[in-house]
Each structure stands twice: as structure tokens, then as C-alpha cells.
Image 1: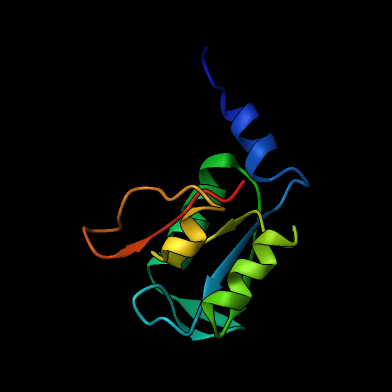
Image 2: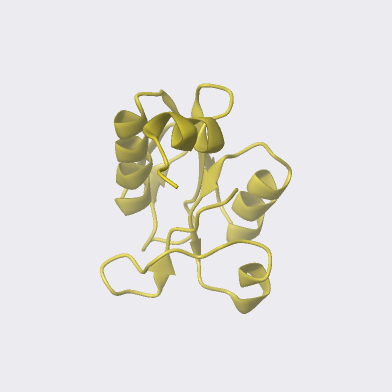
Length: 108
């Protein structure tokens, strides 16, 4: 089965906008402010949006729990979380970012 970019776009950005949740409370994942976030997860979200040719809405939180809740409640399509066994039961974790313990999960 071949997965097309259109199918990935429908899955990751069903409303035509990639809503990416990021935790500003973890400096490994993101830095800055909610209005001007920076860091690896912000860069990854923007790159995913660019490759899917959809705009990116960055949803920034001060705690992983809040970022995870946004994804769980359907307010975010993609979120970036550090590894935590309790969350791994609910979301699929992807490969590590640069071999660190911070991993960007695929959240659908």
C-alpha cells in the first residue's frame, strides 16, 4: 500500500492547518514565548507544514501535561513531548531527535 502526501495531509491536518502543540516548559524541545516560539520542535512543525503545503498553527504551553491535553482533546494534530511511559500507552512515539531523550510523537 502506497501512502500519498495527500493522505498524510488529510491525517495530520484534517482541517487544512497543521495545529502543532509544543511545550515551552522543556528547553530541549522549545524556547521563547507563546507569540514567538523557537527551537527544534518549532522547526520540525514548520517543516512538516511546508512539506504538506499547509499553514502551521503553533499552540504553546508551559507544561507537557497541557500540551498533551490539547492533543488528546483534539485541539492539536501534532505534539512534541519528552518520553514518559504513561503517555506512551496513549500515543505512538517516533524516533529520537538527535539521539536525545526528547522525541516528537505522531499524535493521531
